[in-house]
Length: 377
Image (cartoon, rainbow, N blue to C red; front, top):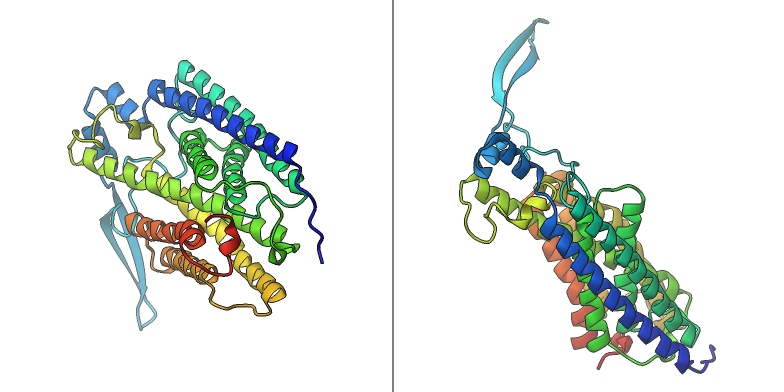
């Protein structure tokens, strides 16, 4: 039996102040990123069209034009001889042509390829503010846990704070390892702000002790893994959504339609990496994190057996965790075996993320089950 300890209200209040301070600093970082995008130089295709004196649509169409190549096939005959066939094929036959003519791993936009000095300074300021916000954020999560001497993710408010922290931390780690992903700063900070805003307004609960079922080492194992998966799924969702918008923009420009929200020469989409890069980034994140999500479900089942006597009872949380697993498995399977790439795969990824979001918010708030101790309602 685990004895509950008293709540340290002073540390709990400090935690609240630190979370609000982190949100204020993240807001400044978001503004700095916005100014960076506003004053940064355009993408590679847009710069090339300006240098060549043509229109953006002409440059995109020219770079996307499939190039001719020779294909040689050697066939062995029944009599032991061979026959060689040579024909000219287009690059688009049996190959993927990246819209915009850019390599899948080539980066662009603020902080990557060709940003001017003013935008680079704003970007560095945004990163510095993001680091400061993360330090305050960590302090808020830490003091929340210290106020009740337990892992600080026993309810939806605490889980959301930890989830936002993980997303921002992962972004900064990528930057620290030399990845040119500063363009991710704006969507990551905005996502963190939205998550924290929902946490402090709708999901907030006072610092308190846990129900007996949650007094287990699996709180650190199972929930920590879920938090990491949630941050990664959010990042993959951002990359997928940006891919769909970027791909739509490229298609409009290639078709000569330079009007509308996704088709102006001054569009912000010119500052993003290529559509192929975004698509590949989303796939890589989902592929890397999927085994951890599998482990999360298995660890939850083991915890359920320890707490309730059965590994699986088709509780709503268990059911939707499994549905989420199936959706991501279908996405990865389609990419690996059916060759699905691009928009079809992106729609599957969005469906899988929607299952994850419903599993977190919908099941916890609107569905009654054994996970109803999430702290809301």
